Image (cartoon, rainbow, N blue to C red; front, side, top):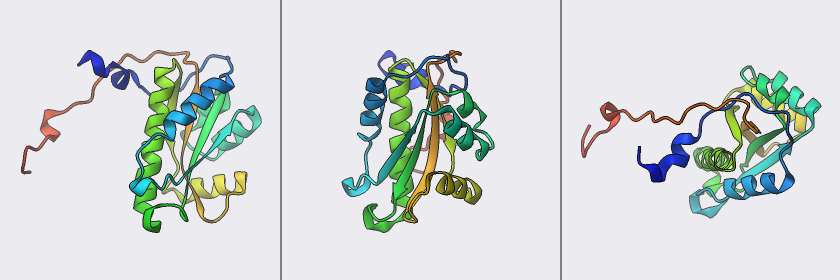
Amino acid sequence: MNPILAPLFARRSVRKYQDKPVPAAVIRDVLEAAMAAPSANAKDPWEIIVVQKPDVLAEIAAGLPYGKMLAGAPVGFVVCGDLRRVNGQHLSYLLQDCSACIENLLLALSMLGLGGVWLGVHPREDRIAHLHGLFRLPEHVLPIGVVSAGYPAEQPAPRTRFSPARVHRGKW
């Protein structure tokens, strides 16, 4: 691995957190990094709900089959997209823009000494409905994913998932 790329390889899914709050300044830094993501035609359709109340995190977790770690996380980020603000009102651009936002968020967490895990919401209708109901989201706002975050209680080793068999040079 190229050492310059170490922060990318160090980002791993973290599901166990220390019982330690995440300072507001760190949350702000993470949000700023998330919103530095690329966006089709610079429309920045993302909207992010920051959740720190344990009871609300537990309610989110109740509607996400693989999100049980949220109940023990100090912070959660619900990343949504505004269908009115996305480039050309295309769902595909919304998904791409919000995914880039989530990846930036995860990288920022890792680089700041925190850990997180991306929990998929879209396209699962039950998960979308759960978050719409919980947060009373407007119809034009679509929840895309949730990130559970905090100071890691586990340290997965850096790794690469590079596969030369999946690289095509100039042709299939």
